[in-house]
Image (cartoon, rainbow over all chains, first blue to last red; front, side, top):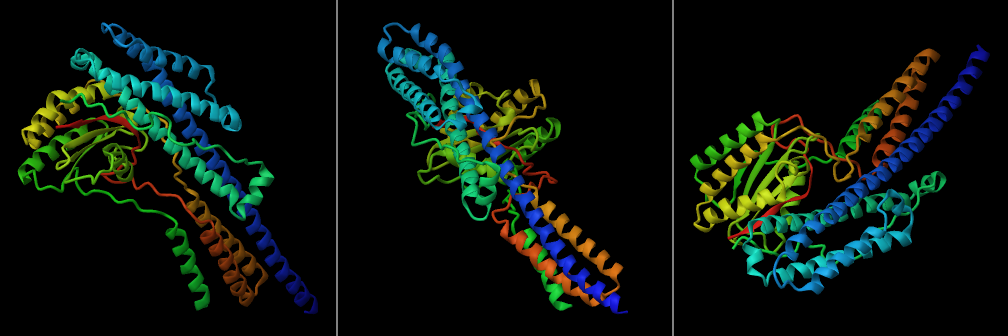
Length: 205
Length: 248
């Protein structure tokens, strides 16, 4: 009877300790999973950003050709777009950019310059009524405007996922796990790229 | 014992508190401007329901508001489309036609999954050739009706179910894991308690455990959102900024 009581007492403490350890393990696992999940969100939203930037790159040759066909079109604006696009393609888009802050910012700037040159082109296009009434050109403009919008959305979404991720690895107590498991800060897209807002082209009048 | 119950309740509340429940419209045609008559709304609804049924649950939503108060229409349409989760979760086959009557602006916002079959150029044409002319004459029903008919035809022509990557926004199912974990610990303790034959100690440990797990559930903070896609409307579709805007 004495032994049973003693046995009972040890068991009691042991259970409590086991449970606390269990809770800590559980919490660690869920924290880690949470961080992995947020990291994945960043990666997948980044993939979408790349998608939309690529879409814009793919649109531009067609746009340039259509505009070139227009007699007397201002060459300098067009050349700016061509050059900006060439520059932007020099930085390879890949998930690796997320880990390289300097390259990431360069990438953002190159794309921003491309966006700005496109904006200027669209302003100049307004002066050519022939182009505006051309149905095919109007559709092309729809695509360009749509792509600019998609880029803006993808960048916002990306910044949102980075914010969630960054907050998570900074706040206590998750920052402890972040450090242990090697989750690092990620870059945001800075400021507005030149044409972050869809150009205010109205082809519906 | 009542202490135990209290913590059980707290635990349940804590788990559900972290889950957001999005707003949903109760109709595919929402007119806040009193422009469309009931009959007109019904005709549009029938057309939209037909598209829903025949085109793999493609959801097109019509929303007419008086004004956007200077907020860019593409921002508003995207926010509404995402909040209402128009379209199905895996196929993102949703679209919303947003008309700001006083602003003379409208936009067709196209979900990820419909971007292939309804490219911006197509939408732009639809707006230029059909919607804008009708809206300019104040015939919103006529414009919407024809637009929906055309959209339905275009979708049926070349529509394949496909899975498009979403915007990367987090939708966490961690809540379920926590609830299961809590129940798991609960059960283990009960079994241990029964095995040792001391019910007093079991009760004492039980509510201690519940305290910890409840705190964990609360402490987890900033939970995820649950996709209530067991309904006709608001199936979890996502949008990426496709579509086109129009003015009259």
